[in-house]
Image 1 (cartoon, rainbow, N blue to C red):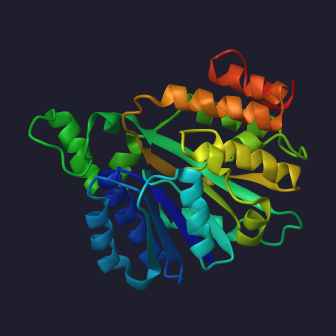
Image 2 (image 1 turned 180 degrees about the vertical axis):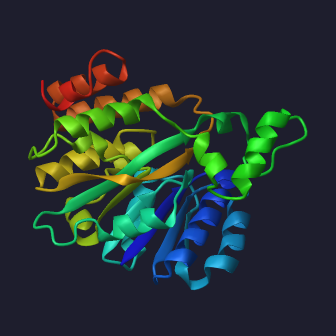
Amino acid sequence: MLAVVIPTRDKASRLRLCLHVLAEALERVGEPWNVVVVDDGSRDHTAEVLHLARTRLADRLTILRFDAPRGRSAARNVGAAQANARRLLFLDDDILVEPKVLTRHAMAGEGEASPVLARATIFHLPWLRHLEDPARPGPEVPFRLAERARRLALGLTDEVRALARRSAFEADLHRLLALREGQPGGRWPAATGGNLSVDRDFFHSLGGFDSKMGLRWGVEDLELGLRAEQAGARIVHLSDVQVYHMDHPDTGRAGDHQANLVYFAAKHGPEVGERLSAYFAGRGELARVVVP
């Protein structure tokens, strides 16, 4: 029914927790779903994490590896080509999911005449950006943070959920989706790759993610959403479920994001590109990106 595709690069500590929580969710759901992890040329201990994950996920887990980084888009595309399911769920390596999330993504689009891209609300754990390994805080970590990390190592408990926060971008997406309720389009900015599901055949008909964007961080998921809408798809918000993002330092990403925005504008036209750039620069509302 559903294949989970996870691109990863040099985030072994968060990948470990991601796969641990995912394995628990899969065990509780009990369906014969599979997981494809694509290691995008990692140089940390990702291989060790994946070896240990195989002992638990067994034949549900497929591991692919690039010798040199090719980017998140290429990793997702290669993973999707190996996935054996009607529907694909693209999940980032720093996202924690619960069983209901998997079920809702698997059912998204059933009975629909048009293709459906689905996403759940993303909550953040901002305190994790201070921890290199959220599951194994060192002795130098303040007691309060260490206690939070120990709770997280137990899984998605109520204590962990209480520490989660919704980002400003997520709040803006919710406002946009409410404004565009019942409208034929204009919901593509909600195609966020942290957790995004799509029918496999439709995804391949789009040509997948644009690999020219994936080498640098950001916007490649929104760009897929725009092409999907142009091809007749609907972007659906699974408002009754949420996932949790393990925040981390994002040094150096501003230049990546801007480079991808420039490429986005060249590909889809300067007007929509400039509106999207203006929004991310804090000059305007997200709704104005889709409706000038």
